Length: 247
Image (cartoon, rainbow, N blue to C red):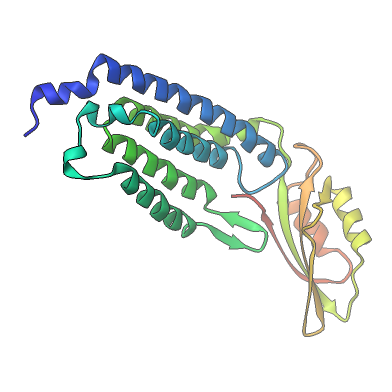
């Protein structure tokens, strides 16, 4: 049965010191992950600063945790029970990967749920840290994860970014669209077609084009409503669909 002395061991000076070191690792990983994520966000990719920051921080949490096994459970030995916490952690990480994949949705060029999946991954890391007795570091990890999800999106909107729009065009029967004309239309509205995103199909004699247009600068891209009006008047277009190609 736990005693006050055994519980106090989780907050002893050596434990607090290790938790502080782990917390600094978490903060550094979050900042570096945000930096990498900003590059992706700037180019209009679905996975942005929050996704990269959460994944980088959670990965650091599990990695640095493995470096201090002597401080797990406040230094209390579990060797006599025959249990292997590392195998339990491995099983959790594998299972959470499948769970996270289940919340990611893809529709055309638009992907949603990446940040939610990353937050599930971060929550798993928080639970593992609580389980091994790194209480202070787990609290810091939870706080940083919440701050990342709440405020980084505001930071992204303030930083220079390039807005990405997924476009589906369905043309009149037997009409042959010209890619150069589409690029000219995008250019007039401050966009450019993202390389490697153009997909062309044919259904019942109707040509269908899917592609992503990326704003040349943060203030260069026209709003979605103006783009819709431009696409509506484009020669040969029978129907269309526009959506932001972000998560």
